[in-house]
Image (cartoon, rainbow, N blue to C red; front, side):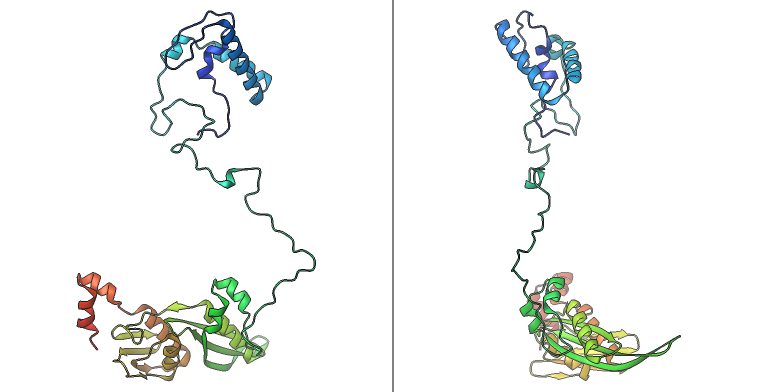
Length: 322
């Protein structure tokens, strides 16, 4: 690993460790030529001072002793390092190299903390109050939901909310029958995004609806739509005891489906659809089956065209010619 600090190299300066009274030598391989003993003495003193900045006196003596053992002939006959993962050049390790060194960033400056230090709120300054979706007991905290999901507050406000079912349930425990309220709600932006959520509360039905609304916003999924009005082809889906069959419809056909599927289509922005619900018609399972089928069981035009090696317009006229 190369060093980013300006630590002096020992081997290139091996000639400096020779006695100052030595005669001038003529060296090759890029070693400096000394014409007088004065220049050799000054260079050697400068080298020793530079070593003393980084190493203790005992280590400086060891470095000078090691340098004195390197003769000019050894320096001339040295071999370059041909290792694949090591730099093959000889230069000052204090310089930055684009290939072998780590990139320079602001966080490499250790004089500053890696993360900004949190600042205390000045006295007399108050935080902005939390924003709620309404004044009812079923209102949700939009400010916290915005921080949690990353969605904007205006978008969360624009979502349509529909309560699918609400009921009183009883859980039998060792303490006896524990009643609570259950609520199932869906939200959608009428443009292909929809979410479903469940909520429970032991005391108030409105709190259960608020929790269902909160969970529905967190569970938003995208539903692909053909021409922004119907689905891509026929869908057959089974969810527990629910057998679901959904079929696309031409423009102006409307929503001729189960009342739960109708609410889901309204929130998702689907305008033309025909469907049947077989066997179980439990609203909770029907809602979950519909959202699961619409979000996972559709064959998009781009995928069909890519698999068949055709253009999108050809696939549209062949399979979705309404």
